Structure formats: structure tokens, C-alpha cells
Image (tube, rainbow, N blue to C red; front, side, top):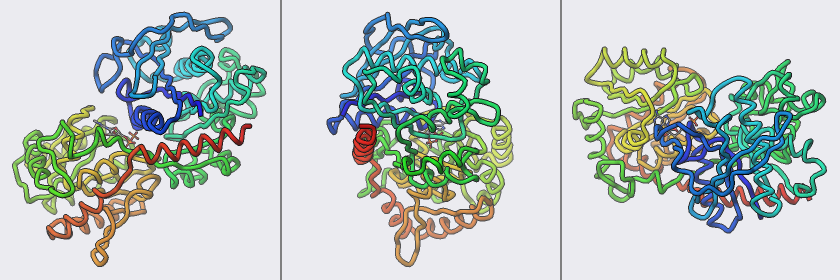
Length: 484
Ligand code: ADP
């Protein structure tokens, strides 16, 4: 099984969100089970080492500098670099015109052109690095043109005759819209637009991926169902219903080499399911970092999040005062909309003994929060998979979530009577429902033995990539067989 996985971001080289974590961990796990997998990503130049992003000196060896790519009415060139992610090679497409601007994502038509170029370059790369792939695994709109190019420009190309595509939707909220007038520049005929890319007068790279791929997946079983409904379908629910027999949901894994309290080097003291003592030291350390008093008996409630409406920050903003009234300490790590930052800053300024804020991206701090907090909030409006709730489980930090997407698949209400369940979840998008669950958690929090039980229920969960890799491997085999 020969697979090429194309992604616009790959941890630890480049990252803005969960896609990078998937593209960074899944290939390693697939290689471990014997899958012949290569990764392809853009080589972003000039990002520096902010956010764990790529820098020009971190992409391994220069393999060749003459990859020619038919694109934009002529031929463009890229250099190709190769590094190793354990057993999986990662190839970087290096073209300064498209990826030399010091950012991962920009906006508008130029962004679509950049990733159309990347898509086409990935196909040309495939021809240079070995035999025909059985599967090209595409991810989100940035690679949504790969199946379209295969179905059009490469339709008669014997190299790709047996190549199938799996298109994974990580977030339907970002669709890569562009002006249809750009199509000929990207190398597509008008009819391709009409049946496979048109979106209410605009064109959509996400739609292209959904329409042209051999099969589809998304990052949790629940989200696979949800995106077929008008509420979560971003106006693509009709198309997704039409393709529903080709659509599966595979829950993301967790990279426990990065996220495990037993081995985590970012946290004050390591601890484990058998000895949670160190967690209290992590709590003390966290409160100190946020310059909060060491009130260790009070519950620490945390969020680590992009501050966007998707993440349900409105609900947090509307319920935070009641949590503070109940005696909670509150910790925020996030970046995003200025209005949210201002709001949390205002709460912090009002109650500086109870609230700590950090605006920006800080991976080390994210680890320290997972270790030091007692409760973790994720009241998302929608959540394709969500990683933080799974990290929380591992760190004995109790998630309080809204039951959407991967949150619904991973979090189960703790019941006092049976002592089963690993967190708290509610369904209505309402601050009152969130607060109810918070109070429920609080009652258990003050019952130390019961709280330990709840923590341990969560810590038992195994969301390792090794398990997930088998699901993808099976999917690859089914999709490849369907093509042949
Ligand atoms: P999404 O991809 O929608 O942002 P996920 O929960 O799938 O949400 O993944 C978010 C990832 O980004 C997690 O690894 C989380 O720890 C990390 N993250 C989000 N915001 C921050 C931040 N401000 N600082 C550090 N890490 C963050």
C-alpha cells in the first residue's frame, strides 16, 4: 500500500491547528504498521520559529531543484527538500513566489492559487519519488484540487491510472472560496466549475475535494453525520448527503509522546494514573505562572482555544461570572478575536485574584494548563474532532463540553450512581446548560474520592494514533479496491 499524504501544515514544521497535529502524527503511526507513506507539504520560508513553525533551516536535505509544474499557463519550478518523521519521509515543495511570504495562510484568490500550485506540484512530485501511489490522502480545501486535477489534467495519465483519493474534511467552516474567473488560470475548464466547484456564484476548493475524490472521511463519526445536515453542513450538506456512502468518520488520535503526564517535560512534576500526587504540584506551578494565589483547594477551570465563535467562547463569556461566584479560579490561553481578548482582560482586571489570562500561542503553557487545571471547558458551537478534550482526559483534567462532533464521541457524562463516565456534556447551545454541568462537576470535585474516580476514568482512555492508523489503513485498502 503506497500512500502520499498532502497537507498544508504538518507539526512540528508548521501549525495553525489540529490538522498539523494529524499530519504530524498519523504518518509516523502508519509507517510503524508497514504502510509505505510519504508526506508532502509546502516549504514556508520566513516564519521563524514562532508557534513551532517551520524555518528555512529545518527541512532536511535539498533533494532536487528542478521539479517542473505545468501551472498558470506555463511551467513553474520548485525545489524539493526531504526530512524524516521517524519512518515516514516528508517532502517540502519550495517555491518562494507562493510560500516565501512569512505566513502559512493569507486570504482571497492568491491563497487559492498558492494551494492549487501546491496540489499540482504534489502530483508532479509523486512521479519523481517512486512508483504510482495507491492512495493520495488529501486534507481540507488546500488540497481539494488534487482530485480535480487527477480527474481532468491527468485523466489519461497512465501513472495515476490506479490512484484513488481519500479527501479528509478537518473543518468544513473553511472552504477556500475564489472567483470563478481564476479557473482557467488554475488550469480548469468551465464545465468543471459548473458541476464540481460552483458555490452560490463563487467557486469552492472544498467542494472540489468533496466532489472529485474517490472517498471522503472526516475526523469523528459524529461530525460525519452532522455535516450532512443543514445546521452543520455549511451549505454543502446536500452534496455530502449525495456522497454519504463514500463518507466515513475516523476519530483523530492523540500523540501521547507529546501529551502524557508521565513523560511530559513541560510540566513541573510528572504523574500517572496510579499516583496523581504530582498533579497538585502542577496546579501550584500553574497558579504561580498566572500570578494567582495558591488556593489549591479551589477548582481551576481552564480554556485553551482559538478565540472564535466556533469554540463557543460566547457561552464561556456569559457563564464565567457565575463560575467565579462559585469560587472557581479561571485560566485563559487563547488568541483570536480582539473583542474576546478585551472581554477576558476586563474579567481579569475586575477579579485579578481569581482570573489569569494569556493571549497568544504558547505550546509549553498549553501543556502546563492541561496538567495543572481541574476542569477544562469546550462548549463548541461545532467541533469536527477536538484534541484538547482528549489531552484533558489523559491529564486527569475533567472536560466539560457541548455534545457536538468529536466532543460527543469522546466525552460521556459521569453518573454518581454508576461511577461511569469521563466528563460532563450538554447539548443546547446555552450558558445555563453549561453552568448546570459546571455545578454538577463542582459537587463531585468536593468529594475527593469520587473526583479521583472520575479523573481515572478519563485517564484510562486510549486514543493513541497506533489504533487510529489501523482504521486509516483499512480505509485506504477499501478505497483503493473500490478504484480498481
Ligand atoms: P482547532 O484545530 O479547531 O483549533 P483542536 O482542539 O482540534 O482545535 O486543536 C487545537 C490545537 O491547538 C491543540 O493542540 C491545542 O493545544 C492547540 N492550541 C490552541 N490554541 C492554543 C494557544 N493559544 N496556545 C497553544 N496551543 C493552542
